[in-house]
Image 1 (cartoon, helix red, strand yellow):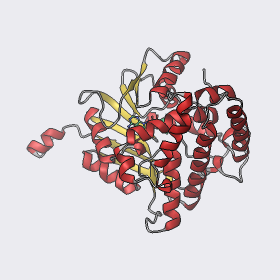
Image 2: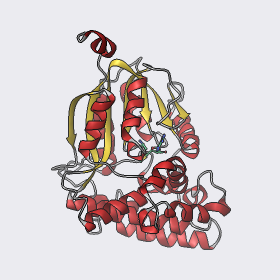
Image 3: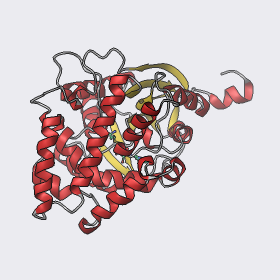
Image 4: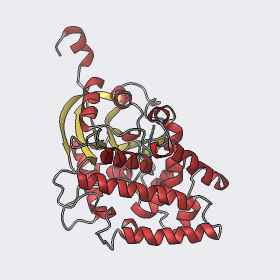
Length: 353
Ligand SMILES: C[S@@+](CC[C@H](N)C(=O)[O-])C[C@H]1O[C@@H](n2cnc3c(N)ncnc32)[C@H](O)[C@@H]1O
């Protein structure tokens, strides 16, 4: 069952980090980032520690505010956030033509919200790959509760070095996860390796758009805010992702920034001018109430010291995301569908299939 109550939130802050170490962990996490003097190279070298600290610290806040799926979605008018997220998960499954008997890999699977939904929708067997132990423990509990534990499982590993043989999976997808990779080419190449020839990989990628100007100070600051608020080493441009996919060997079938012309902006739910009862906890008023609640829980010792600092990191993330979304310089839903060629080695050897 989803742990979305205030006491669950308080108990979960820090994940696998000792309660007494939470404050120190936030401190260390913040120091990785530009506004605290951190360097991009250091974030890339220590990505595993940085990203794991981030998810240990924030997972219970995510679960409290967003539920079991940790991603955004293109939204139609009249659709709730939860409905739009499910539709976006079903869309991914349909693009990959998932079906019973397929062995599918979910790269960077969080606590498995999309994995469970896609497994129930498609009847495929799904392996969730995640480097965060706390999230896997939560995901396993939720899989058992949802009754998908016979066909779905989790593997704890780094998506830069996957513990799978070549040509293992019938399909691979990644939802707002590969943005954490220190080297996007290396990550896509690893996905290419474990995917069977002729099969598809689809993803929603976090990217800076073509409207991003790297020489504009305001744009740079917004990019930095999104990075610190979301545990990211460096957000890439959409074009850099497509180039990296091609270099890794994929054929690009189609790609589109689904945030473009979205009837309801993906960031609206986080926006100060917006009120929503169904997603109240992530709205500015909901976040204000959460802040008072976390402060009180920390004060009486139910939440570990440092919990409020974690919330501030997330508030900063929300501000950066809204600014980046409004200016159209950032998208969390850059979609692509790519294919591993059927006979890559023959193409290389003989020049044709
Ligand atoms: C924003 S969450 C998205 C989770 C999930 N896809 C969803 O939509 O609910 C990003 C996920 O990527 C995982 N992740 C980040 N870096 C990773 C790495 N190097 N190897 C494996 N998983 C990683 C995180 O632990 C987290 O679960």
